[in-house]
Image (cartoon, rainbow, N blue to C red; front, side):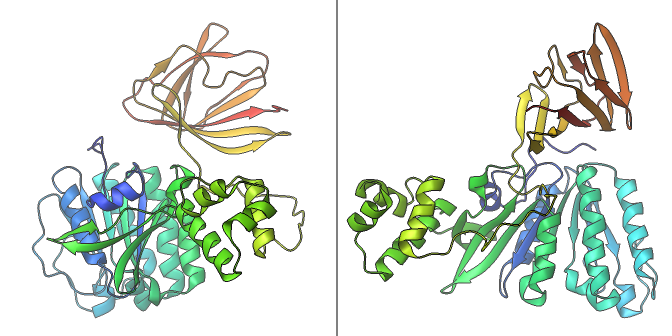
Amino acid sequence: MALPLEPTSGTALVDTLIDDVRIGDNLVFQGAPGAPLDLLVDRFVASAQGRIPVVIVNVATPWHTPIRDGVAVLDWSPAATGQASPLEDAIAPGASFEQALASLAAVDERVGTGAAFVFDRLTAVEAIWGSDAMLELFLSACPRLYRRRSLAVWPVDADLHRPTFLRRLAEITQVVVEFTFDDGRLQVTVRKADGRSASVVGRSVHAEVVDGDLRATDAPSSTRERLGTVIRDQRLALELSQAEVARRVGITPSALSQVERGVRGPSGDTLMRLWEVLGVPFGPPEASERGYRVAHRSGRERIALQDGLTAERVVDDPATGELWLVEVAPGATGDRSPFNVKHPEVATVVRGVLDLTVNGRTETLHEGDALLASDAVVSAWTNPSTSVTEVVWTVHGRQ
């Protein structure tokens, strides 16, 4: 069954903060003690039930709740309790972690693409199979579900995990939303949101639980607003006036006031001068050439190239060129090249099928096929299938 056109976390506040849930998102809800993680899980399941298949991976304790229509419970609790489970999708007592992963893969194959998955706390996996298994579950399941265009929710008790583990999760997943408490008030903050505008990360709001839902108690604040607060607080700590700081930085007092109030963000040059004037260290102590760089998914934006054609730019290097991850909607077609270039380009289909027209001839590419256009130009493209096609598109030597 295909995903609905508007996937959701089940909680409107979360959807708004992250600029909407995207197909393939793994949502990590990272909560401090007392955070309403169970509420978020329940709302996610309720929003998905009846629209798409739902899989609940149960680990810590035996499952006693009646199973609703359209919901499959993958019960791993026998490995913890030593007692057999009556559920159809259950592993045996004493099952290995490899057997648990195999059962997850089997359920995933059965429900197909576009399902909704909810995972029990990762600490429960650690208690049975150890910390390596806890990370391995996320390492294996997160990319798999992303490729399968499914949605997944991972509630994580932040206080029970090491910071290094939480950072590793953030590197792998698409979305991290943090739930903490600020002077007794629940604060919801976006820590990662792949494919959205860079302004989404750091967006924050205070909230409370009202009638089984999460409601904002104030307007969301942005990274820009919090940066302004940091600048203002540092200026006041040094007992400097706005006029004096503005004079040293080389901007008007009005411009500094707008920065401190979060009305506008400072340019890179202005920010560096602000840090110098305010005595705030900026950047690494010294630069070092490593000979490589990593292009993380964090902060990459999904760009609409043409109707039915969206892409994320992974690499942009003057010497080697650009590398894009391209998605072609089912049945979409275009009569011009995705990239208007006169440089060699390579299109490699990693999932699905794609028709490309070059020099008046149409070539059909299947998974694993690649087309190199060195002197010719791609003049048209079509996805003839009913599924999304994924393409790695490289444009060489654009310097």
